[in-house]
Length: 171
Image (cartoon, rainbow, N blue to C red; front, side, top):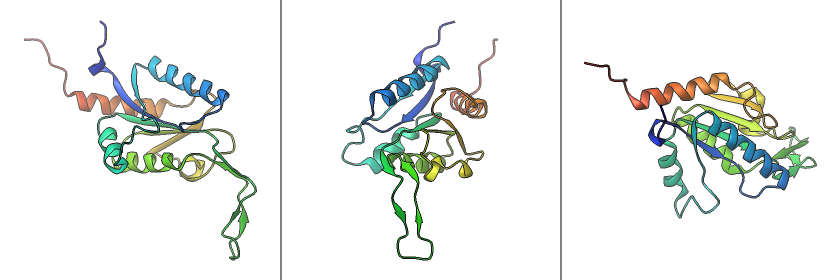
């Protein structure tokens, strides 16, 4: 039986808009993996948020079954200083990704969506910090799409089944 688009789980895929060639290749590998799971991948490009991203993003997220956020390196903060001139001053020693991904993660968690974050080596801020991964947010390495994602996959499929409603039985 062939599935139509309404039978597919819808996945919002968030990633920075400007990527290196290697990062773009990795993004495409994630899309292929997601589509191989029978997921419809939905993305917003740089201009896709429109004039009111605070309306556009929650509206879009309210119609998906799960979220994947790819934390590609965007800002080299390895020599930055956290909280300068305070008793907590420290070197950052990490890379940062797009701040929009943090916003997308927060909105997805607020909507109780299954969230999978995958970070490039060195990206550890906010939702990409392994210490905050729990039942609501699952995290994996960006380098291998599909590895260690069973819990997230199950949560997405359960959400899709609830959205679709009960399966009708014969007469």
